[in-house]
Length: 156
Image (cartoon, rainbow, N blue to C red; front, side):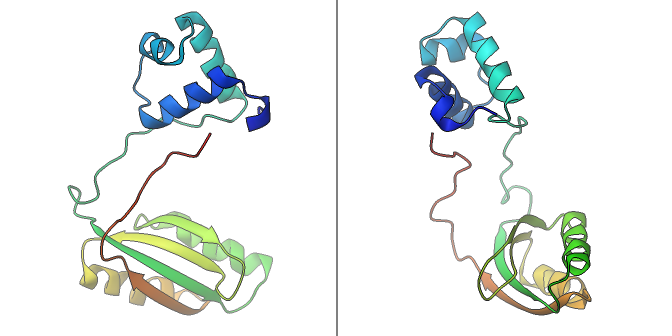
C-alpha cells in the first residue's frame, strides 16, 4: 500500500485535488498538478490500487434531503464480548439514520452521528431502535446547534 511517505509531490497534489472535486477529468487534473494526462491517469490508478483513493461519491446536502438535524449519540454496551459488539455493529450497519459510527476508547463504547428530520424523528429512532437493542446499556445524546466546520478532506 502506498503510504504518505511513499507518495511524491504530484501524488499528494492529485489526492488533494480529487478530495476537493472528484469529478475532475484527467486532463483538468493534469493541468492542476502539472503532469501529463497519461501520467495522471496511471498515478490515479496506482493510488486506487494502493487503497489511498477509495470510491468516488457525490456529497448530498442534508438540509435539502430533510435530514438537517445532527445528533451525536454516545453508547455504552451491556457487555464487552465479541458477539455483543458484532450484533450491535450489524444493527448500526442496518440503520440509514446512522451516518457515522466510531468504536471508542474511554467511558463510552461507541459514538454515532445520526442524521434525522427533527427531534420527534430522533425520539422514535432512539426509543424504538438503539435503546431497545439488547447490547445497549446506556446512551447519551447531544444535538448539534449548527455546523462550524465539515470536511471530507484528509490532510496530505
